[in-house]
Image (tube, rainbow, N blue to C red; front, side):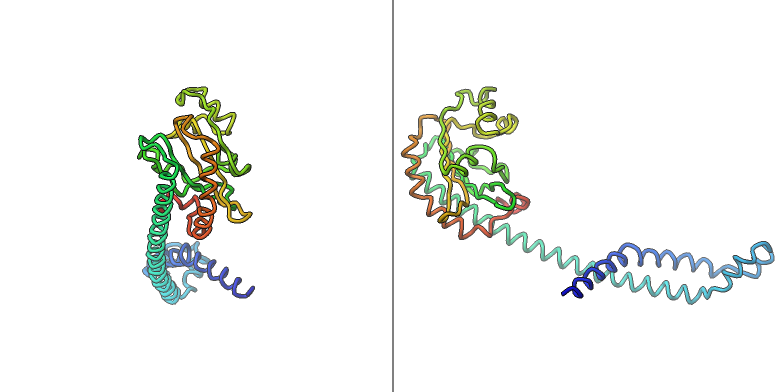
Amino acid sequence: MKLMTRLKRTWSFLDAWILRWISPVFTSLTVVLAFFLDIDVETLRERYPDWPGALDMLEGFSLYKILLGSALISFCGAVYNIFRAGSISKLLSKNIELSQENGKIAENIHVLFENVLYSLAAKLDLDEAGSERVSIYVHMKDEEIFVPCGRYSHNPAWKTKGRTSFANNQGCIERAWQDGWHFANNFPQDRDGKEYREHMLVQYKIPRNTTRDMRMRPLAIGAKRIQVGTTAIGVIVVESTNRDFFEEAELKGRLDEISDEFGRMISAIRSYIPDPKRAEEVGL
């Protein structure tokens, strides 16, 4: 195992040298040597009698052999680079194919969640005027963040995707993740005002600029932690611009009814959900 690792490192080193140094250097050397072949050493001795050492050195080299060797190495390097370029091209093509496949998987995941959330919206009797939105966030343990995997609202502007990830120490997502359930409808009425932004900063640690950029600024929020057994895996969030639309006990009861179903679904497809670095690239 160690021998294979060393061989791979050695080959990687040689590969870099062939690509960056050996082929370009020997190609240049071949050009320079070709120039020296036309030099008449005897004539130079007559013109420059003070250069015996340099001329002896020049005459002592077998320029033809060196030229032939340099040309051969340059040729081999060029051939290697051609084959290498072909391999890179194949790898790039394969990478594009895999990206397209991942994109299709991501698209299917998005459609799946959207359909499920559409069904949930019907169960929750969301206002068809578009005052509410329901979203689902999956927790990525390694990155310590949440990835939005689905969002539905009758308002088209509020169902479009926004950020590809959310910090796990901000917002109602954090509250629900830590406590299992979070409900609030005590937001300042002026959703565009400074008081609202201050409220989001103090209560949810959301920066003012982030609040200002939010498409939807709710007046009521209900968030439920989703888990499989004892393992927490995500959060589902219901928001409304009408602070009196939800009764906390009723909303919690309805989300409790579907949390197990959502948990099993997320657990089944979790390994296919792209990490945040690629989520936007492949469509989530």
